[in-house]
Amino acid sequence: MLRTYRGSCHCQSVKFEARIDFVKGTVKCNCGFCSKLRLWLVNVRPHDFRLLVGDNALAQYRGKNPVAHHPFCKQCGVHVFDRVDMPNGTGYPYINVNIACIDEFDLNEALNAPIDYQNGRADDWGNPPAETRHL
Image (cartoon, rainbow, N blue to C red; front, side, top):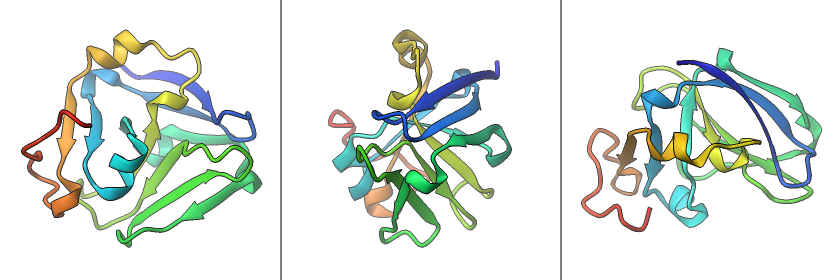
């Protein structure tokens, strides 16, 4: 069931609103970026994400993946979301919301959601990695 959540970075310079359905699951990826940050993500369509405050507070990191944009707060350094353009493994653009940045986050809701483990390290997005315990 889609529900609207609000979230923010640590210093509150970046605030967002996203319509999320945790029943559809969450994502943990083993690529260098996600694994170093220990990101736990949930995918939403761009029309279900709205940056409320902080466009000017964001800096952007671009890694090896040419379709992935990794904005983060310039003040506190928190990585709130990613924007992933086409082409990618899903066939459509999406936003990866860092679920740790959801305000009033219900950990049980996320823990009860299925987790899709992605093998970004091997650029094999359709198959989970052999090892996921560290994610």
